[in-house]
Length: 194
Image (spheres, rainbow, N blue to C red):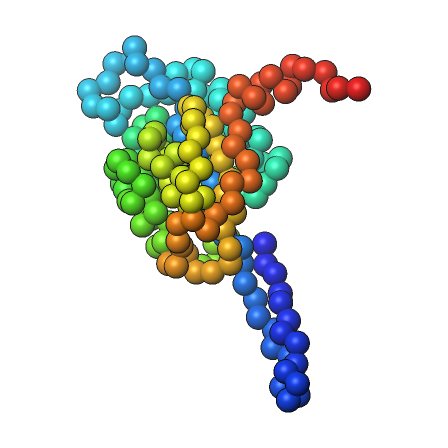
């Protein structure tokens, strides 16, 4: 979202200055339920379970409906995380640049925050698809202390003040929503109130 602000003329008659700023949006997306019974040699190779695939499709359609679609979507290179992102993007018909980012596989919030700080300022919304506990820790840092339970395939939106990605700071974000696939499934089954 681009906002144009105008500074009123100073009493000395200085001209009006137009300045553009872009609110930043971080979307956090935990990978879908993985298949612990599948054959895999390394943790990175663990695939999604069918339930995880269904949840990824549901979350992709949800984000397409409520917006915004991220211009850039970064995922852990672990199969379950990148597959979650690809399935969601396809189901939601996102027009996002999808990339694997090694730092998102790392533990802790710092590598993920570093990845966010390197994004181009032309991107207003960036999505990170990764793992617990790092995803919820990023939410806690950005919102200044909000601690949440982040189930598989859950997605959260955090709005940040306008500024450069490189200047991203903790405690400046506002949690707008956190949605789980189960919540969407329940909402689809229940008739509207009234």
